[in-house]
Image (cartoon, rainbow, N blue to C red; front, side, top):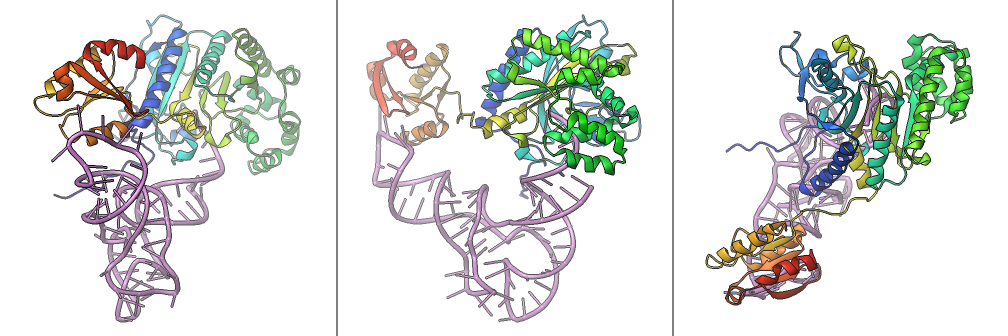
Length: 438
RNA sequence: GAGGCUGUAGCUCAGUUGGUUAGAGCAUCAGAUUGUGGUUCUGAGGGUCGAGGGUUCGAGACCCUUCAGCCUCCCCA
């Protein structure tokens, strides 16, 4: 038979149990917090019509959409979804009778035809965990989303994370302030977004290559070069610029709400240089990074997109949401040593000796399971050594030995693999043993 | 899209100016130990040296082409 070289598609990964157990744990915490705030689960197809996806993310991002070779060139051309926000917006536009406000969570893989960089947590297939709320322009919603991000990262035991907050309207105001028209917004934002990594001098070089006028660069420097300007500073600068004033007022509400919701002050900050790439954002934008580990990339990112749903339905429908990057979060937790070695959830392995004793082994396993203990039975009556070795490699803590001697006396031997000790108890005492040991 | 690095056993890698039958550790399997793992000891299996071509008496090594992977930048989760 011809063998095929086993290989895995670039930028994708297999998740083996030691990793999958942690992925499930993180998702479990996310779901619990989402539900605590009243978000409901939905799921959408991996495949969407291409024209549903294009034109929402911006030119660069559109090129990263995975197109399928299906009815190419027609309106039925198909693609894998690039994120969960745009498909969700389509769902809202198609289900207009949903009670508003509508709040949903959605945990699914997304695909991007990107150059993978695993070390930075960058893949072609990765999981996004999204929450979005539709139907309100109140900053209360934006604050709630950020509050949830804070709660999840805190429950996951992240110590030093920072949720950076800005507003697209304020960025528009900033471009007006430095004397440029709105067509410059994209270029200016992309450049100043890099200020957390490179110096203003380097940003200046970049702006010059983009032919940004020197007066505008000089004026920009007075605002962003010193690093952090406060929201109060921004308010003064934006006086008389409508878009900027609106952005500042929204952020004032938002930050006040966050404080009232007891989000620790050290966990979030206003940062005027935060831009974010996706085109559909219209109001507040936010993103979480680990200041101690800048190479990992953002753990979460989101914002308000009041016009995206309307682009499908024609009906003005405000919305705000965020995406938590499951793979980024796990990459960070791994690099920070926050994950223990877990290969199984099995607590007890029941041994097999022979065809004669196997029925008693089965009964014993059933008893453990009926008492809520995750239990495996070894399927082959091979040497005990091999069965112990299996328990050891998998990290199963207890081995229950049910041999001829034990059966004869109505007993079972229970060995604690972590200590090397074992006890011989009556099968009637199993329930007590479980409450003492598990 | 731009630049750099690396391809040798399942994994991580060594392999001298080009020279006999290409090695090690880990992992796997067997035995020491027929009812007891993780330690130790002994042994075994496992390779078209990424692929194709070239130079040479002789190529894992040198040259050309090509493919794949990794890293950095850009951008993002």
